[in-house]
Image (tube, rainbow, N blue to C red; front, side):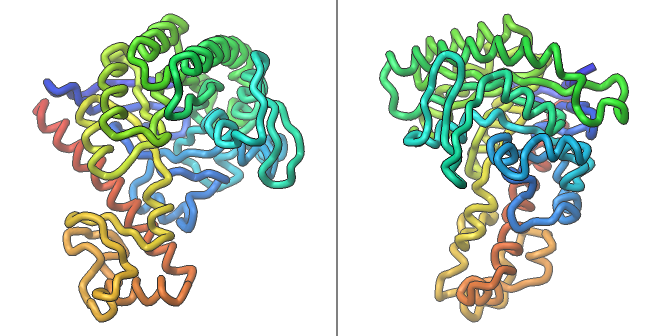
Length: 368
């Protein structure tokens, strides 16, 4: 059995409160998933993530394949055991990272040849190889190998990218169906299987997005993601694509928008019916001194905070806001202390996870 998705409440606007049962965790949705690129959510330990209420985090197939290697992780019992995270994990396909190596890759129908950003070594990713890597890593949810369409892209480019993505989706699904039981935890969670999500592409063209969604649904994935967003397009276009695609996806399976977004965006998308979202923004912004608060964005490097004894966010009850002042966080940033990125990241993640907790509560109340 792969994932079980149970909708508990819905709203007229399309929002839904649900539970997603995976091998390692029953995840409450809508959910924001912290990004743990190389087997770590940057600057935040696993026990702190647990205290913050994170139930599912991401691992990055491309980075873990290059270092320490998926076979090494397989031999150590899979990514859950390797990184001491007993809760749910999702791995991306590696497609977006390969996409970002625009000067170091060559795309063919068979797959993508690319050079490592670490040492320049040559590698070749096919849909089958992406599945092999993700099965070895053993995430609860794997993603089909896709080709991310850049923005802007003309129609011919978007059509070609969609052609590849659809062909690769079929190959990913066929290979994964034949090998999904080879995950490292198969004996520990007898009867449970790794799930596979398809990824809707098509650039910013509504008809191509519709075609992609309809064809993926016909293939029969465990869940569906909307990819190719947050690649430089205006927010209005992001919203337009999500609005176009959501009604085409099955109501009884999870819907995942990849790589979004700012706090107000994730709340808006959750209330529209998006079940899963992820973004590096909370931790990346934190390392540059940008905090998200109930009063808006706060650049802790500002001089006005040099002697500010108030908490980063008076409305926040996270472990950082309960203990530390804006003045202290500014001092850490100015001094280049490693603790700066740690505390800022904890607060930002607490803020994002708190948004989803609040949204889940309001969606549940709408039913009650």
